[in-house]
Length: 130
Image (cartoon, rainbow, N blue to C red; front, side, top):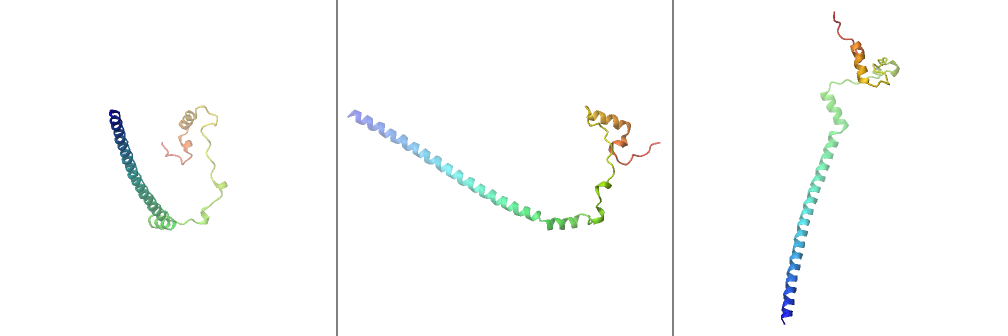
């Protein structure tokens, strides 16, 4: 008889432990379901925000709008067909101050630059000093 009481006590303890474990699993699954619902809600809000930003971008990127803003705020003139020219009429490229096979191109550039500073830029000569 004592054996059956002891066995009943062990079975009751096992049932209590199993019930606690099942309750813990149910509680964890509820927490995960709430977290999933919250994430889905956040994803939905982000997708709505992306859709709104895309619509705003398409409005801002409209070529007609950009053209109107450019005409209103920029002092641009239309280009005439006479403003284009052939590439062979461009001025000659200034000679390079650095040989192509130079081991120290920056040093060679600085040496040549000190000899003739106006030569380095190929621009209009500087002011004449007397």
